Length: 211
Image (cartoon, rainbow, N blue to C red):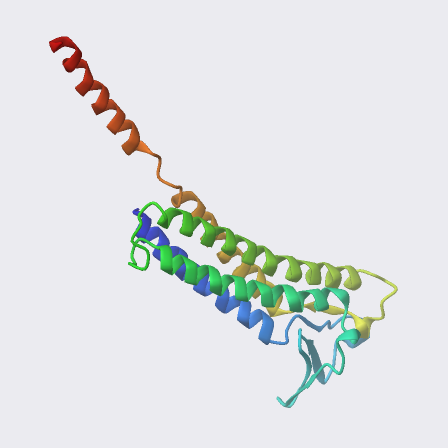
């Protein structure tokens, strides 16, 4: 597979990863109500996200309310807000840099600079993937810890929401895109200089024989 094809695949993976990151940020399904113990039969489901919490009734109605203050959020969700937003911004910037330095575009004419630009984009995508995986993994760890904690009341326990899994998938796609770019964006070696030196030596040898 040529470098142009690999770069096109990486752009597609990066776009899918960004879409997953946006869904992870926007949809309030990081934590959902856990139906255990006396809470197994309930008329409503509580869902919590980064920006709001929603209550879904058994009748199909849903009411959402934004958090009144940032301070009422747990530390993992506070950090997740910043890290996921930075991940999206870095992912968009990395894709723009990749499109500018890709082999299938003519934004940069210097063929020696293009691999370096692609390598910078690859590093940005890897960092963006890590910034997406870390907060969802942190939130998942806290949910599992509280779920297994006998001191936490059953109505206060939560389960993993769909956004946790979407975030894992999006982060994996960003890491995969960055990893592929790192493998296929190595700067070209200076083979031309060695060839020039070879011809210069071979050309100088006959001149000495004739003298």
